[in-house]
Image (cartoon, rainbow, N blue to C red; front, side, top):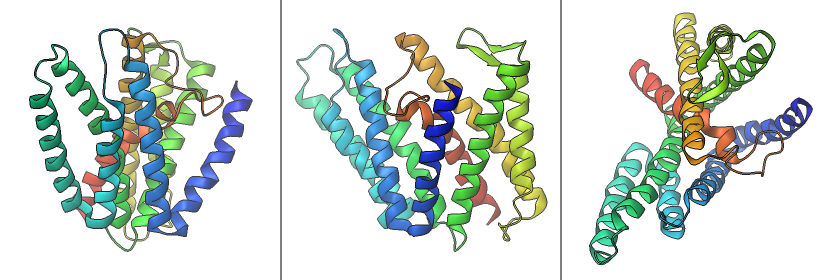
Length: 262
């Protein structure tokens, strides 16, 4: 399992890093693809006899957020959010005779906001300044370091359960390792000249915390739905949502951090 995880990571990480330096359009296109795949997985594991999220509508409205972020940055996100709310209100009104419409509508929109809106903040980070691509790379590195160190240290030294009711395999030892190594590594990234040492340390601590919270959020979702993985497309990691759940949280908070200090 570990070798498979490493092989998949060694294949996927160069693709992500390459998209960052190829340009904004390539990076945004890859984020759009990740969003659509993750949403597809989300709606697929939700479907049962009582819940029928509208996958096509969810994918269409979800795809609008990265496009809004690419063309109009923050104002684009705001515009798409307003448009999405209007679309879902219209759907709700037109389907009023369906007794399950409230739940179907709510869960479809949750998939859009939880995945598409959240990951679109990575495109906003890219556009936030001339150093945007380095900021995105920093968030990726911090998140990867957090995930990897928490996984390895948790397996080797983990004894105290972090949240046994949500994810029995996660431990406090892994959480602390992820936090401190993210803080240490991001703090040492001297290729981000516009951030001071203390700002990099602060960002590393934020990523080391929020990335693991993002992982726990998705773990609770899988626990509720009684599924092991959201998909199978990434060998050793499960689905796309399994791999990018940490970035859902760390990307949003990192964007707020950059917005406050720049």
